[in-house]
Every structure is written in structure tokens, then in C-alpha cells.
Image (cartoon, rainbow, N blue to C red):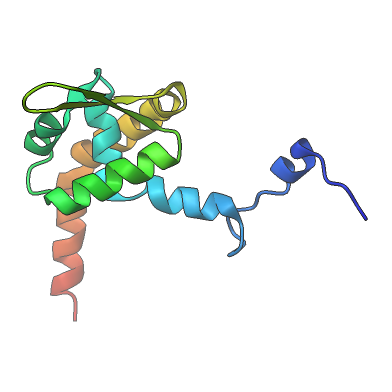
Length: 128
């Protein structure tokens, strides 16, 4: 029986392969709500209701699913404070914080290049 060390397994991750777990993680962090949640939490912990207000048009179901998935992946922590009503705060973990520079860069790129993208879409749509 061959034993694989953790570093060998890590080196074997290749997101181009369908069975690679890194592909699943890439799928998760490329989700629009996940990227926006990470950007929203980058400035510090937030209550669920504050996140819902920040992420205009996210459904309660989608926000809850996204936060649970991020918690499962170790990117977000959930803290429940017993009160009336119950207070639930979400914060990025150190692993989640390490993702912030990448997510902020992608968000900034999208915002800065939107006019050019819209022009390209328009030109494409008008082409025969």
C-alpha cells in the first residue's frame, strides 16, 4: 500500500481535473454572492441583517446558504449572542481574510472596466 504525504497530496491538486477538490473551492469562491459577502465582511464582523441590507437583492435563502457554505469551508465564523431577538454576527476567519485582497481586486476591476465591457457587449450584440 502506497502512502501519500499531505504535501504530496497538496502538490497533486489540479483544479483542471474534474475530481480535484480545489475545483469545488474555486466554484464556491467564484460565486457572486460569496465574493460580495467576503468583500462586505472585509471591514469587520456584521450582523445577518446588515449583510442582507448591504447585498441588495440577495434572497434570505441564498444569503443563509452562502454563509453556511463559507462557514463549512472555514472562511467565516458565526457567533450567536443570546438576546431578544437573538443576535447573529458573521466574521471572516484568518483563512477568509487571506482571500480579501483577491476579492477586492476582482471587485475593483469589474467596477473600473464596466464601461468597456458594456461597449464590447453592445458591439457584439449589433454584429451580424
